[in-house]
Length: 63
Image 1: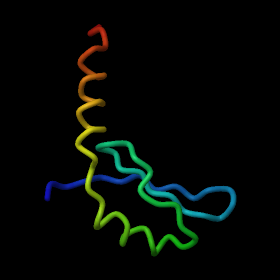
Image 2: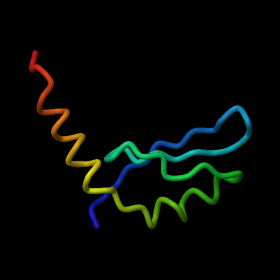
Image 3: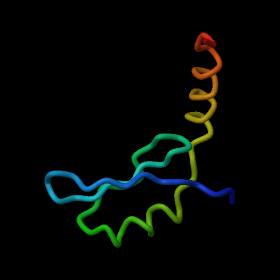
Image 4: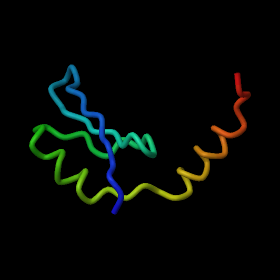
């Protein structure tokens, strides 16, 4: 499995959230930061979303 990077945040309500930087999906919102690794370790990007994102990126004008 290729390396995936995740962005973590601590929300105002005390929950913790992780987002996949490859597909930009919110992977989990949990009460304890220690729970995030479990969700990240089993995440697989949805190929439909990846294709859509790549198509959208290629349709942007190049500056």
